[in-house]
Length: 101
Image: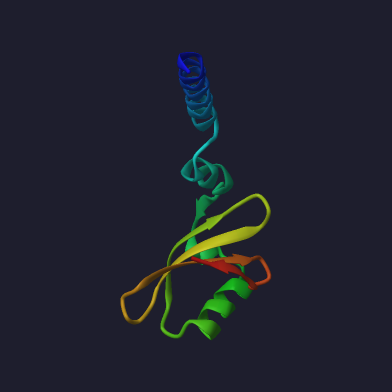
Protein backbone atom coordinates (compact mmCIF):
# COMPACT_ATOMS: atom_id res chain seq x y z
CA UNK A 1 0.00 0.00 0.00
CA UNK A 2 2.84 2.42 0.81
CA UNK A 3 4.41 1.70 -2.59
CA UNK A 4 1.19 2.68 -4.35
CA UNK A 5 0.95 5.94 -2.42
CA UNK A 6 4.60 6.79 -3.12
CA UNK A 7 4.20 5.87 -6.80
CA UNK A 8 1.05 7.98 -7.06
CA UNK A 9 2.77 10.95 -5.39
CA UNK A 10 5.76 10.75 -7.74
CA UNK A 11 3.54 10.44 -10.81
CA UNK A 12 1.42 13.38 -9.66
CA UNK A 13 4.54 15.51 -9.09
CA UNK A 14 5.93 14.66 -12.54
CA UNK A 15 2.64 15.49 -14.26
CA UNK A 16 2.33 18.76 -12.37
CA UNK A 17 5.87 19.84 -13.26
CA UNK A 18 5.34 18.83 -16.89
CA UNK A 19 2.08 20.78 -17.12
CA UNK A 20 3.72 23.90 -15.68
CA UNK A 21 6.56 23.74 -18.22
CA UNK A 22 4.03 23.47 -21.06
CA UNK A 23 2.19 26.57 -19.79
CA UNK A 24 5.46 28.50 -19.70
CA UNK A 25 6.21 27.65 -23.34
CA UNK A 26 2.73 28.49 -24.66
CA UNK A 27 2.43 32.17 -25.62
CA UNK A 28 -0.50 34.02 -24.13
CA UNK A 29 -3.37 35.43 -26.18
CA UNK A 30 -2.04 38.92 -25.57
CA UNK A 31 1.29 37.98 -27.11
CA UNK A 32 -0.48 36.48 -30.12
CA UNK A 33 -2.52 39.63 -30.55
CA UNK A 34 0.58 41.82 -30.55
CA UNK A 35 2.19 39.67 -33.23
CA UNK A 36 -0.93 39.72 -35.39
CA UNK A 37 -1.54 43.40 -34.71
CA UNK A 38 1.21 44.53 -37.09
CA UNK A 39 -0.39 47.86 -37.95
CA UNK A 40 1.56 51.09 -38.37
CA UNK A 41 -0.10 54.45 -37.84
CA UNK A 42 -1.03 56.43 -40.94
CA UNK A 43 -2.66 59.78 -41.36
CA UNK A 44 -6.45 59.66 -41.49
CA UNK A 45 -6.36 62.09 -44.42
CA UNK A 46 -4.27 59.57 -46.41
CA UNK A 47 -6.88 56.80 -46.19
CA UNK A 48 -8.21 55.43 -49.49
CA UNK A 49 -11.33 57.20 -50.66
CA UNK A 50 -13.30 53.92 -50.50
CA UNK A 51 -12.70 53.73 -46.74
CA UNK A 52 -13.66 57.36 -46.21
CA UNK A 53 -16.87 56.74 -48.16
CA UNK A 54 -17.66 53.58 -46.14
CA UNK A 55 -17.22 55.44 -42.86
CA UNK A 56 -19.43 58.30 -44.04
CA UNK A 57 -22.10 55.92 -45.36
CA UNK A 58 -22.23 53.35 -42.53
CA UNK A 59 -21.38 55.50 -39.50
CA UNK A 60 -23.38 58.67 -39.35
CA UNK A 61 -21.48 61.58 -37.76
CA UNK A 62 -18.38 59.42 -37.18
CA UNK A 63 -14.89 60.87 -37.33
CA UNK A 64 -11.73 58.81 -37.84
CA UNK A 65 -9.59 59.66 -34.83
CA UNK A 66 -6.67 57.35 -35.69
CA UNK A 67 -5.84 55.10 -38.61
CA UNK A 68 -3.39 52.23 -38.96
CA UNK A 69 -2.39 50.08 -41.94
CA UNK A 70 -0.66 46.73 -42.29
CA UNK A 71 1.31 45.14 -45.13
CA UNK A 72 -1.78 43.28 -46.40
CA UNK A 73 -3.55 46.52 -47.25
CA UNK A 74 -5.90 46.24 -44.29
CA UNK A 75 -6.77 49.22 -42.15
CA UNK A 76 -7.54 49.56 -38.45
CA UNK A 77 -9.65 52.61 -37.73
CA UNK A 78 -10.43 54.17 -34.39
CA UNK A 79 -13.56 56.21 -34.94
CA UNK A 80 -15.49 58.49 -32.62
CA UNK A 81 -19.23 58.56 -33.16
CA UNK A 82 -21.57 61.47 -32.62
CA UNK A 83 -22.38 59.99 -29.19
CA UNK A 84 -18.70 60.46 -28.23
CA UNK A 85 -18.27 56.67 -28.28
CA UNK A 86 -15.05 55.22 -29.61
CA UNK A 87 -15.04 52.15 -31.86
CA UNK A 88 -12.26 50.16 -33.48
CA UNK A 89 -13.11 48.96 -36.99
CA UNK A 90 -11.19 46.99 -39.59
CA UNK A 91 -11.52 47.44 -43.35
CA UNK A 92 -9.71 46.48 -46.51
CA UNK A 93 -8.52 48.99 -49.09
CA UNK A 94 -11.82 48.63 -51.02
CA UNK A 95 -13.78 49.97 -48.04
CA UNK A 96 -15.26 46.60 -47.06
CA UNK A 97 -15.52 45.91 -43.33
CA UNK A 98 -13.43 42.96 -42.18
CA UNK A 99 -14.27 42.65 -38.50
CA UNK A 100 -15.44 44.88 -35.68
CA UNK A 101 -14.21 44.92 -32.08
